[in-house]
Image (cartoon, rainbow, N blue to C red; front, side, top):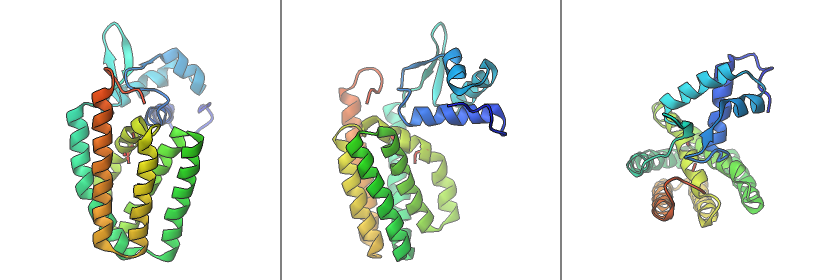
Length: 230
């Protein structure tokens, strides 16, 4: 994927590309990132790659380790738990507001995203599945129509997708799709209470799966997902 022809600053383009690769699971936590390899893959020089990696370090996606170089960061259990706590509160509110404001057209859009996600799951296309997961939650947030809520949730979107991608290859992928279907039905039915409960239950189930996965994993993730927007 060459990014050299884009008119945005190269550092920003490269940063977006590497971040997307990390969130999509192409670079697993603990994996070393080599500047030369990334530069060749993206069709740029090493300089914008080096600058992008510094930005990603500040964002928490990579760590710069002496004598080892740049590696994809591992989100700690405490950090993940804090994200899930915030998600339960915010996504319940977003679901409640979405159920209040949903139309037939927006219900069809939710269904289209889920249909494509189900096809990706069958293909074992974890990257697409994680992106559709983020799109689904993004559309629910759009339906909520609350600008302040959006400002709080958008920075979490990449992190949520990153977390989701860690467990999407196992049973969690199919369970998550079933939970999304239930949430979409509640929103289409304008059932605010059911939508809020479905959203909270969905996030709690994701947390249980993630914690069980981490308990059985080695030092780093090997299998979410922002954002993000787990």
